[in-house]
Image 1 (cartoon, one colour):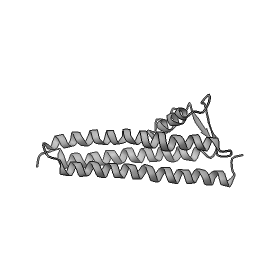
Image 2: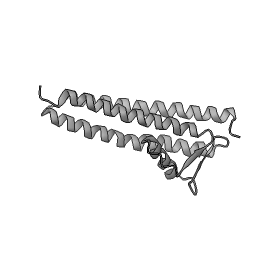
Image 3: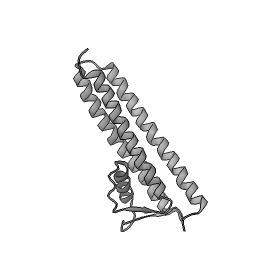
Length: 153
């Protein structure tokens, strides 16, 4: 039913572009936070607070850039291309429906009230993996910064 090669090729191309962009944005964001923490003056614990708020801010920026403008648009575009699948559960597929699915997938929450059908499902699986990796990457980064800055030297 959905097993046509061009549709899967398009979905895989979209996946490669979205994953590369998501990882690049996260990497660059963490580099900037690390540079700022390394140059930081003041109490070490304040650096930890800055790091926590900066990582949360980074994720909020990523939700805006990656969820809305990357994955959300990707779902909307792919759902409009014949053979790539559709999103079931939304009365009429609007951008906010696609963004909602993307946010629920990226955070691995996965409500299931908007469900992808067809090759587009590959994008949701990869997006959940990307979200999980970026969130745990931030957690690891935060842990390492706390190890370095929690106690005065």
